[in-house]
Every structure is written in C-alpha cells, then in structure tokens.
Length: 190
Length: 281
Image 1 (cartoon, one colour):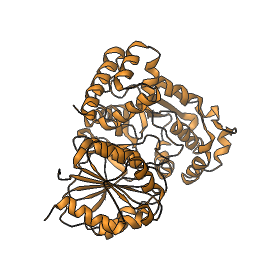
Image 2 (image 1 turned 180 degrees about the horizontal axis):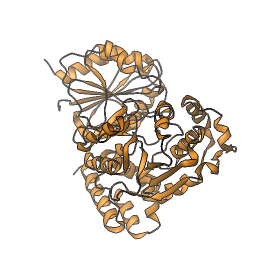
Image 3 (image 1 turned 30 degrees about the vertical axis):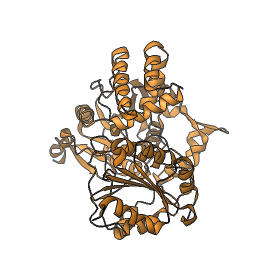
Image 4 (image 1 turned 135 degrees about the vertical axis):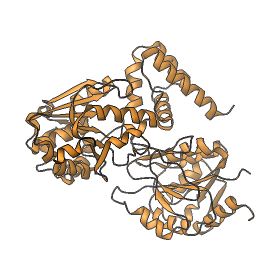
C-alpha cells in the first residue's frame, strides 16, 4: 500500500469532542499533513486553541497561499471553503455554501483527493448532515482510504451514515479505535 | 490515463478557448477553485464534460455571459464580516471625511451586496452626498443584478444582524422593501454609484480612489495575478489611500504588498505606504 501523505477529517455536530479525542491520540511521530473541516458558527473562532491544547501535533488555521506542512493539523477557517492546489499550497473560496456548509467537507475532500489520490486517508466523524459523503466517495474513486466512525458510536449519526450509504468505507470503527488505526496506517510496523 | 489527468487537459483547452474565442483571460486564476466552478457550470448547463461546455461556449454566442458569471461570481452577504464594516465606520470614515470629494472603488462587486452596505454606512456617516462609488466587475450579468439590488428575502434576518453588528444606526428594513420572497434595496442608495465593466486581469487604472474594497476576489487569483491587481490598486489610490481585502486574505506572497502598511491587520485594512510620512507632518 502507498504510504499516506495526508489525512483529511470532516465532522459537524459533536465534532469538537470527537476531534479532541482523535487528535489527542495520534502518534507524535506522524509526518502526514492533517486537514480538518469542522462545521461551526462563525463565532467559534477559538476552535484552533481548543484543539491545540489536546492535540499531539501542532494545530494551526490554514492560511491561503501557504504550503501544506508535514506533521501539522490544518484547520479550515470559518466562512470559507478550504482547497488544496496541486503544488501543495492552500486556497480559500467564498463560493456559496455546499450542503448548507462553508467550509464544506465535500469541497475539501474532493480537492485533497485529486492532489494526493491513493496517498490520502479520509475520515468522517460525528455530524448532523450529509456533507462529506460525496467527498469520501471521490477519495475512494481515486484510490484513497476511507474511515468512518460507526454511526452507533457517533453523537450525531447522520453524517457517518450518509457517508457509509454513498461511499462505503474501508474501515468503520468506534471513535477510540480510529487514532490507533491512523497511527498504524501511517507508521506501518514501526 | 485516469480521470483527473484527462480533466486537466480539458481544463487547459477550456481556458484557451475562452481566451482565443472571447478574449477573456483566466490563465492566471488559481486552478483548484476555477476547476470547481467549471465543473459546477458543466452540471448546471447539463453538459456531459468540460469539453461539452467548451463546444457550447465556442459555438453559442449567448453562452458567454452565463459562463463568465459562473466563473466569477461568488454569493456575498450584506455586511459580511460586520467587524470590518465597523472598523470602516469608526476608523476609516473619519479620515475620509477631510476630503471634499471621496472616490471609492469596489473592485469585483459581484451582485452588489457590499456596494449597498457601503452606501448605507456612508449615508449614516453623512458622507454619501460627496462620495462617488465605482462598482466594477468583469461580468455584465453580475453588474446588471447589482444595479437591480434584488435579493432573496431569506437572507434578511442574517443581514439585519450583520448590519446591527456593523454599528447600524437604524433598521435595515428602512433601506429596503421586502416582499414574501424577495427584498429590494432602496434605489436611492445607488444615486452615486457607477457600475462599469472592468477586468482586474487585463484592464488598467481608471480612477483615483481614496478607498478601494476588493474582498474575497484575489483569493481566486494566482500569486502573479494577485500581484498585478495589487499594483493596480497601488497606482489607483491617492496618497495614504485605504485598501480593504477579505478577512482571511494573505498578500505576503506578493512583492508589491510592501507598498501597503496594515491599518487594521485583523480586518485586512491597509494603507498606501509611500507617503505616510508626508501625511504625518
């Protein structure tokens, strides 16, 4: 299997708690770039700080035109879609909401899928709408790996269920098992 | 050959066709968003592929305005980022007030939500009578919509909250008439607005401005084109003139960014640097 270069994570309702659990259990040796799209109100500007306190890897807000960094968690800013250019720099878009959401997980996942193809892992966590399902499907089409939190384990079932219905998944697991799986996929048998 | 590679070839041909057939240059647009917008157009116009869209654009003259609108216009809100408008009202307008005549250039005005937001702020600051707003866009259709000032009424509540947060002194309802589904901005608000076609990728300086707003437009440009647009703004601004960009824009990659100093960094309000010293005297 191709060594993953990036991990893209999407969530909405209940997503902050889930992200704290997941990012808190990643291996500090990971050199993958992590991209996170979490639906939230514009007022939730402190998300980066909140996640930064729990995360093993540094958390920063993605800045347009800046390079995607290895071993860093990049957070999609509120009010904009986050995309990745093929030269591995970030781009922002103020285009209309997708699935009532901006940032939209579908937009991030589709763009990341085209850049990293089979070297991308897509993760869908708890969430209250169907955003991310089409993006996860695109990731699988281009050879990437799809991980979905078990809907029965998720605080809000709609998002993981929609992802499973549309895209299916290579792994469908409860939240506590997802970080160990990512560590294993990214670090191999280290 | 897999689908994304084929996609890239079709994109390249589409951009080339648009340029050769109609003279519109999108070669310096940032690829990820451009591709996304082209795919949205392919879906909306029920073409099967990008090549299908290219064919219609080449052979059906009526398609061009539709394509240009699809490639350029993001939806905006009135008083999007209220804190930026509050900063304009409280910090920038008092400085503009010293000019007998104020010229404002809204570059890439799209459907005009920010033009009307600006006009309302100026009205409330007592500056509108001596202000001329030039609202430009490369899309005719966008300008047409902007001059009409008609928007979906479902936006009204959010816009009204934005207006209050931007320091609005009255009620947004005072400036528009609302129907069941649509709201129409009071046409008096555009009495000092001139709508004109202007393309930041190819056109030159056309006015001398005290304030330029170009929010969330340059994010769709490559670094090279961003730099071109910023040069144009530098050359259009009066001494110590103001430039407002979108609140998440980054101009660090543009050499010309040195010509601007931050006035309010979080709100991405800049001031032309070269003559600041003279002003301070």
